[in-house]
Image 1 (cartoon, one colour):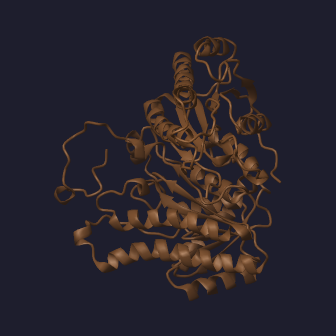
Image 2 (cartoon, chains in turn cyan, purple; image 1 turned 90 degrees about the vertical axis):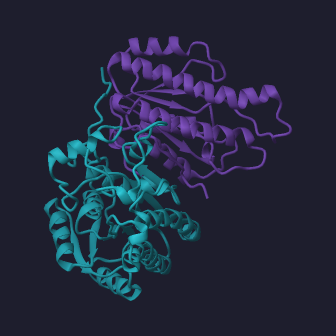
Image 3 (cartoon, rainbow over the protein chains, first blue to last red; image 1 turned 135 degrees about the vertical axis):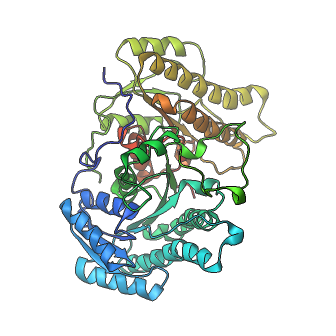
Length: 290
Length: 204
């Protein structure tokens, strides 16, 4: 009997792709020094791409480079604030001088923190929305200009979130920004299709990592997993692999699409449920740990 | 060109329904290592679904169910007759529901998980495609409902909604190849965390 019951994640060292799938590609990953950005960078590197880790903090980006080199990958760290188009152009210049033309772009840089909208400062709103929306747009446009000048062909993957389908209290900034990324994805895909630049998006659920609250704590992960219908949180390689899939020849005909990977977390609801607690009265704005 | 992969080595996949994309997906699953079994149940009848599923589970089990619905004709809302409406809409969603629930029952009885993939029309409504548009909404929420109902049973449910799944689907070799690769990936263990989703190929 070859049937499967387990929905455990495949381990990182059993990737779906051969190690030369992306050989010759250079993948630039914003916010690639940690978390989900590093998850994508490691998956690209595992498939043979050279990696440019872009971070506001050069130290953190260098940490990402170490993690990629630890699995036998080739990577460099470059510092840039994705909200500044000139800084992005300089980062691409540095990257291409050292690694060659960037052929894959992963727009991942982002931040998020719970605040009620009526208590949210303009700076808080701008901090989250500009990194996510402006950063994704400026980096994509810089990437596309260079790809078009080089004769076309390239792939972009944007890191969105499962809550773009709903929004939720305490997350007006990030929910708006992440939804904007998904609709921008479709628009850019149309604009650049003639240049064979594909643009896709991943709307991810819970993928705890070293940078998230107790992300490496096994007990925390187990408890978080219990609130998700599929029974567990996501493992970073699962997210990285689907991002690599979308940038690979396997997805050569896929563009403008958003793929959700969340263990059905966003679909968890009952017609009848507990009393609604107004967000302003909540002890924890994003809810209590299960 | 894509390298050969064995994402589905040792898996048995049942391919049911009829549609423009079913052969593309069946071939892709086979290339990814799966043993592909074509359902012997006619695409437009309900009889025999349960019997076939029992027989297949007695003969080694089914790891993957792919369903491409019932045949459909393009007709405008005011031209479509009751009989055609029943064939195009009711038969399509009924067959998908009956096939997937029979499959899930057998999985539960066997104590195994599984993967279901629906192929369906693109979500963008078009003139003369009222039946396809109606089916799209119904299957979209069928996917979401079944995915949550069976999440803890290890049965994942997803769909690909694409113009490539329509009878007049455009000729686009890259998109067709990617449809097969995406289908194979979604029903493989690499997509163990993907369920309750509907994705397109290049729908704009």
